[in-house]
Length: 513
Image 1: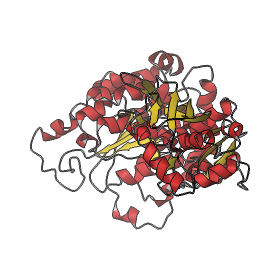
Image 2: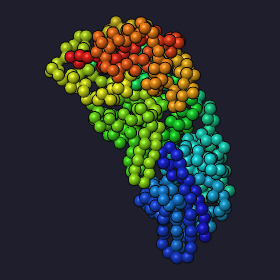
Image 3: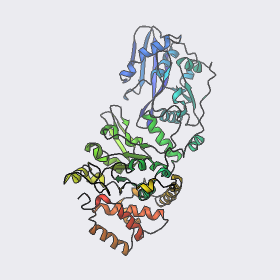
Image 4: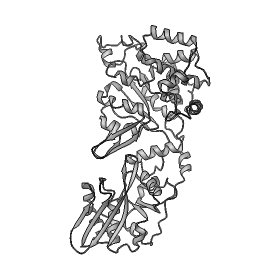
């Protein structure tokens, strides 16, 4: 008897429906075709043990399993349940054969018939709804994640026995329901950190506010213990909240990477990723035999924090250059090419020198002559060119640390950022893929960042006296545009330019001696 069941393969953040045809006829042996990998071929042993331990049986006949389309490689153990359901239906152990074809069925089988969670449940559920399936049957751990998709019956099951009862119409199992909007708004402001915890560092908080308002990349330079990491961790708390579209897009990436817990249905706060400096270039941008998202894609719509930037391998930093510009990463292999979104804010931190005390107000730097410049040169010019704001972080004085006065809360700063972002959204509503000031092209900078004669003179003087590089010109204008937006000013004034010039520390000639 021939039965068709349906599973799904995930490539990038999109899913492709896989038709699993199971034919049980007289004869012997088990055959599986359709470009399966070793994990799929090993499903026979798992299915046989799972069926035996749940009072079902694997028919002692010739079983042929075809996975179509045959030109797409089928990878992983998530097809166990799809194949098992097809075998049970083809051998008459599932009576309602037609009902089997109405669902996408996915799950990895344990030897006792239990189910292990799968990756990519959300994109699979979205594809199932688009193709008109009645519902999706998958492990209970993935049910809430898939139930975000409306107009689709999502059944979270714990064993193959529950699947058979459900498909035979003998189950009391109810579809899992998740109120997407309620889930979205429940945790939208649920942040662990707050800027109110930070004593002093008002100029750094101002720089972070400007970076958040314009989507600018930022680097913090300062001695150990000055608070660089502490400040960076609080940046997501002042970014505008994710909208529902961004939340779904971010959740899809984390779903594909297998980073969602069973309790998470929807990611509602902006991601903050902080990879260690020993990270490989593949782990950072994504890749592997079956291309998986890397740290830059997991930071999509959020913040990628690179602590101790000069300690990262040069090759790792260089692979970020293209994604920083294009806000997506394409991973190509011989048989397939996948694209992951990678629109993130880059925040980096570094010591000013190997000992950490160059330019320190109290401690003396012990580095040999030329060592500071060599240390800074580990960061290439093209990468530095993509960082708009450079800020020097100085240690906090004792009187500020011991002060009882509370600092400004993240919520207050975030409200100012939201107003500035709304202004930019209206400005760029007719521009494709431009949502904030940091994404402006050179032509847009000339059109939208006009300055008066006094401002031009200030910029000219700054570039000559401070030895600012030519690449700093556009960056200063972009940051000045954001500062003007924060003060709700249509034109860029001299004071906005002066503040923006202040944020180009590493462009100054002789900064490193």
